[in-house]
Length: 272
Image (cartoon, rainbow, N blue to C red; front, side):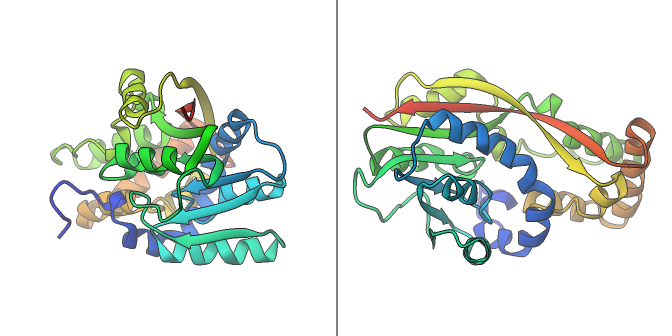
């Protein structure tokens, strides 16, 4: 059983089982926001940056490719193992470590900047995670966080919900996903303030989840622990839900390549 108050996406060891499918399906999607976050940090080659909740390495590889000195941490040991392999394949130097983002082991003011793309927003104590990022960044450096907003415009989740309601209308309503805690701008600003970071600059950015086909995407839709748990909870109706999702997507977008949009906040603040 999960600890009280925790959701599947908040259990690091569960991510160990999703590395290949996450890399194939979801990382190219979130990398669009990561690139916008990297631009917001305004770094120059040679500066140091910490990536918190780095996953299998999308943002960290992008940073290293720009000539930055990158340290990447994630609580999933298999995600970190994959990140190291990818960095070696590309001849990039990244210090990748398995670490609890709520208890960073780095000294104060170690880095020029830090970012977290859909990472700390999953932490049980996101304020503590962001405060740790602030602590390890030098005064005048920047911290950037990406979080979800406008969940009604996250097309994949909306389409999946419609498919579930069509096949399993009596299914109990699911609790609000932890990663949607900061979907409102006021709550996102409060996260920064509570972590000791004042006046963040917050922008919205749209990304598109691209897939070769609706069927390809639906075969890989369990790309994260939360999605996998949702499908598992459907029991014997799960195949019918997947089939309905394929049908709905093909009806709307066709049988070839598809793209599904979502919106995120990108918040950037200087360290006082």
